[in-house]
Length: 523
Image 1 (tube, rainbow, N blue to C red):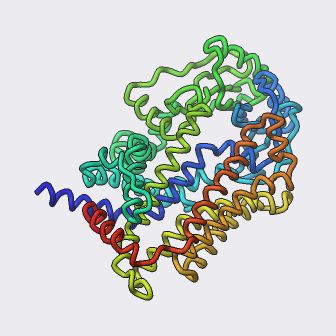
Image 2 (image 1 turned 45 degrees about the vertical axis):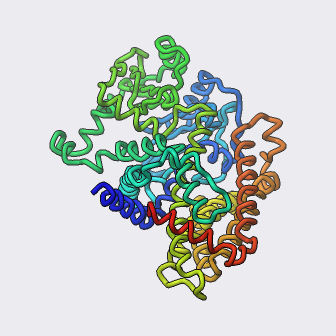
Image 3 (image 1 turned 60 degrees about the vertical axis):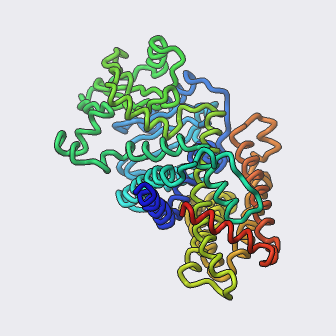
């Protein structure tokens, strides 16, 4: 009975992994890139320069700019520069301007003047693709959430299937074909198992209102009431139509610092600026705590500067939920912990990829002497290549488009996204036209060249090349270039392994037979 249950779990682990593996690979890879979305955005807009952080001066610059250019607006939003974001970001509601009636501007943190940066979605593209898959709301979120459930299911069934999972963690036999892939799959999976469980479960927590809406609808009637209570949304005060100067925002910031010294601000919102009913809200940055909260922590009267409300402590249930969200997003992580998140994300992507390779490799052994693979196996092979090496080419294509598409072109951000999907589509066509091993090798080799040359491309097309960023200690820009170079070197090694002539079948047969037996035990 136990073995029957284990085999059933193995079947479930194998087939759900195959059917959703290609999409999970893309979700995990883009999610991993999202841990550095601010740094990616900085690289994609090299016109934005970094300056020493001075929150008080930045608030003054932002207020002067908004009073001069958005005094008519009913709502202002301000994001101050941080260790990860270089510019002052300001925005205001304007029915005649911008997307969805909202205008965004990036200001130089030293001069307060608008920075004419190229239009780019930057790291935000990968972040949103990770949970929306570039699909209309809510279909992309539904699909990504369902994939998170499948990932959690795969982890649980994998634990059940591999009854000697911790013993197998210390076993790795290189050069053993399928056995090596299985050893690598097991070792990586066990190494980062707690991380993967947390990521998968917290994904469901984030979209709890979509996954389990019945209780919310029963308690609130609609989602608006739920979100208002969760995020502490206050009713917008009515305009009194009495012109009143807005108090200096820097003075309100000083009051916040008196209560919580060293607190960093996530955003500052001003409602009804220039009116006697003006309200100013400060929200503490999510980087200051593990729990991810977007509600305002302090609310002031914009005309008098009096403190109106202060955020109340959250309940244990809400803190637990917010903590899962914060752990998933990793905004609290410092540089070293963020890199750990990144490598764990890469490991999760590798677990999915090795699982897909093993599924196909096991079945390819049965047709080793055939001139061609059956149609269904050939389809899996093509999708494996396109979803893995093809996706890496698509990512590289996005960054190349960022530098090669003219900076003044209208809608250039959309062209970057188009380049991403076009490169991905071409990789799929190439995988269909070329034999499997050669397609792998050629795409990996092209990816190696594309990533390795990104630092040179950056140096030739901007003033923020590696030599400049290292001298200026701009570690976000330099880190991107160095990571791209490292990725290129790794892909070059992988391409070399694929393009090397395989060993004669006679020598590989005993290994293949043993690999088939070993893999069959758990798959």
